[in-house]
Amino acid sequence: MPEDCIYIARSSAIAARALAGEMMVMNSADSTFFTLNEVATAIFQAADGHTPLREIVRDRICEQFDVDSEQAQADAEQFVAELSSHGILLVSNQPLAPEAPR
Amino acid sequence: MAAPRKVACVEIGGIPIALSTCDEGFLDLLRQRYDGFLSSSRPEFELEFDLTSTGPVSDDDVRVRREGDEWLIERGDFHARWDPRTGRGSVRQNANPYSLDSVLRILHSLILAERGGFLLHAASAICDGRAYLFSGVSGAGKTTMTRLAPADITLLTDEISYLRPGADGYAAFGTPFAGELAKAGENCTAPVSALFFLEKGPENRVDELSSAEAVRRLMRNILFFAEDQGLVEKLLATACDFVGRVPIRRLTFYPDARVWEQIRNFQGVPEHA
Image 1: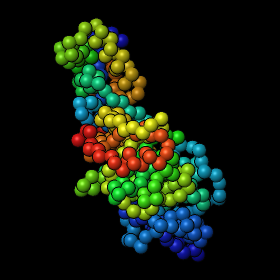
Image 2 (image 1 turned 135 degrees about the vertical axis):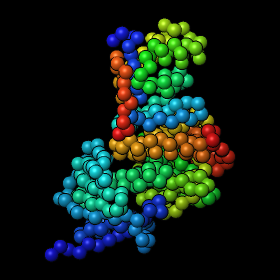
Image 3 (image 1 turned 120 degrees about the vertical axis):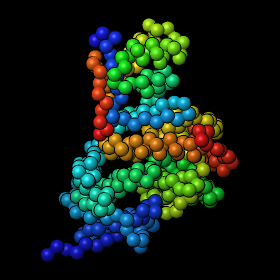
Image 4 (image 1 turned 180 degrees about the vertical axis):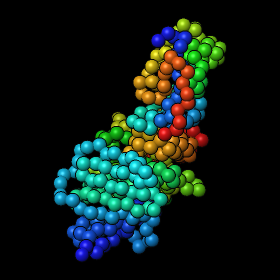
């Protein structure tokens, strides 16, 4: 899948909560629990299904966290793949419609 | 003609549940097992038990899911339905007391999740009018802490702590659900003063935990089985609220009676309020 065409959306089967600057995410299907750091939280919050991942990294990560764009993109893809494998994020090469809550 | 049903009302955590059965032997088992938690209060909920042939407790995973308006609670040794709108349910299980405990624990976990409370895999005890919780993985020292408790400590449970929110924070209640100690807790309640995650070590030490670590450890030890998005969201919100209102620490302890002096002298405030 070409990098420019990665779209991400939050699954509707998760519960998320911010506490003391950190985002906690839980998958209601298997109770897996994740704590996201600031960068991961920024990606998670921007996962609206229609903004390409490369645009999220450019506008939300590189600008705010002063990191190298290639490294940031690689880290973001790794993070997205991991959360996707746990059902937290949905990934597609086309824009995603928001999931209806289950 | 069907035999008449006889009822024992069991009140745990201030929530009276009427348990009815046609089987005299099972009724005796109920009364013995929950002696100290029998109540004459008006039941909020009702469960009708019908017994199947005796069999072992199942090692299968429990499944708790919604089917229409009802909760369906299933494991190899029991099958239960409960309608939260009417408060009534039915259970088919063998006469094994461990199956009975499991059904009751699951039902309470569902009721508590809606009310901002939860069951925690933790020992708890009252010391000087305040409740202290001791959680951790198996072998971390929950039963050891209860065994080391001085005579003036009131044991609420050595296995499953029962927590509900109140106006001034959270309250812990005694439960009949026993662990290694094989002894039911006292049927009483006290405001929660602290939650300690236990680790055994060469000396007694209390360390702070980050809010995320506190929530992560809390969620890992909450007893919750339901495959339900709404309840999981509520539970996570409850866990975050608990972390904001109750001091949560890591307690490394050397297993002798001195650790209770550390507990008695603990003056913590929530780190994450």
